[in-house]
Amino acid sequence: MAFEEWEQAKANAAAAGDDTRMQLAGRPAAGGSGGNGGASDLVVHDDELGKLGNMAYDLRHQLGVDGKHARHASYEAAGSLADDGFDMGTALSEACDSWDTKLKTLGDACGQISNHLDYSRGAHAKDEDRITSQMSSIAKLDEYLKYDK
Image (cartoon, rainbow, N blue to C red; front, top):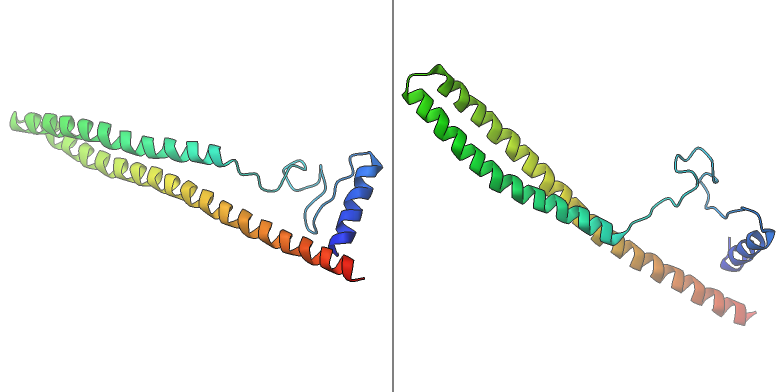
């Protein structure tokens, strides 16, 4: 569909006055089976992604700080219990090792979330610039062709 035809189709839909909506090929109409109730396919709020990324980063940092404190205190208690001849000291030491593994996994997951959100923000900005540039080129071509007739 040429740009002029697209603009005319949009104008016709707007003039219809009802909830007629334009859609690209492959996108279900409002209320269709797309699962999003006719809402936009992709909505990215850069500030929200930034906030979520910061929260994930802060959580990762806090897990490291608090986890280190808990690890130190637990290993100290395990050593003290083991020195006093309690089998519980060995069990607590094994629990601490498991805790370290889980804490590292959770911290890594928070880091991945933060990094992915940062990447998504950058990728979205690049995509937006590319699409804007392409649409501008199409509009310029359409103007050129319109005056060429």
